[in-house]
Image (cartoon, rainbow, N blue to C red; front, side):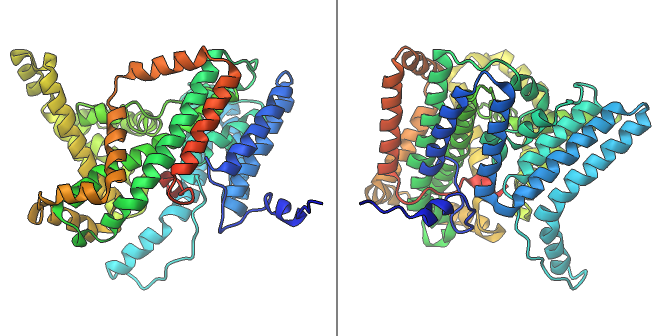
Length: 498
């Protein structure tokens, strides 16, 4: 007789700080399949469907972040009433009061959990005062759901949307499990109208969702985790132990790892959301095909860059319009410093953001002469010159990521020192021989990234024409292959720390 250990079954429903639920793990996929079956059975009852989604979303967040579920619930309740208060205010002054309350509440909580120790450490380092660091744990996804909530508040204030009367709908918007931990940072103005729509999926939408989930798993587990554990982490942990060739390959490898890790999460989130009837915001659009830094930011973390464009850069640009070009440059620098600070409370992240602000400012300054040069010599029509632009842009981005990944600022400088002073190109053959699987995965990762976008469209069309059972078999085989190739337990997504 088979014995059932009910205590272990019970443990599945409790938060374990040593083993939090990871998005894309086998347990998550099993729970999601169970949800999908129930969800489709009650699809015709909107309230039941929404309630099930809310309960499941809260459970997923609890399994990932424990007691901080209460903070998420508080965030949803507070912002719902801030939004309604603003919508019901009779005067502009009344609206501003609710706006200020919402900004203080949201940014205050974010600053407390994410930036308090950064400022305390700065005070200590600059000998301004004698303080002690606080024992703070940052709630998972706080940067993402804070910005999601603020977009709702700001859109109401700017009168681009009306506050919703349904707390249930708003609560689902804030807690929706596919994008609660690492985005995309969706907007209420686009998400809320989808909640009450009739649940229906075409064959092409199902195929698209399955394709996204499969791509996300492959990117995350087969590429990002593997090259991280087997090469990239080793170099960045001790860059001085490796030659310049190995360091530059680690820089390129990390650029691919970060892209595959984050876009892999986004792919899974968008695919899962689509199977539930929601079209989430696109977050990546082949960013390493960008021909300029401004083009890169139209393709990379699109939900964050568009958020900052709408709510930070444009207001700053308007406020500084009397300064003309200097005002635009100042707005760019400030916005990208905030991009860096949003990612993490460290000088390295601030410098990374500042660096991209400088890139953008230089791009703005040379925009006029560049356009004339391109027209004069027909450079905008040259495929060779286009490839050169992509190469330069990729390297500017990849080397900026050194500050994103390095353990500290000094380690980042060590990476550049090794590349400049200890390059040793002859080591490349030795690297290929010693790290053959890693080299192959890095090569394949970039190869598939640079394939024409039509390749993905054709794959979706082909998959959509297949029988649903064939689709299920293909998905099962992909998941099996991914689990066989993974080198260790599923690693937390990089953007969980933000």
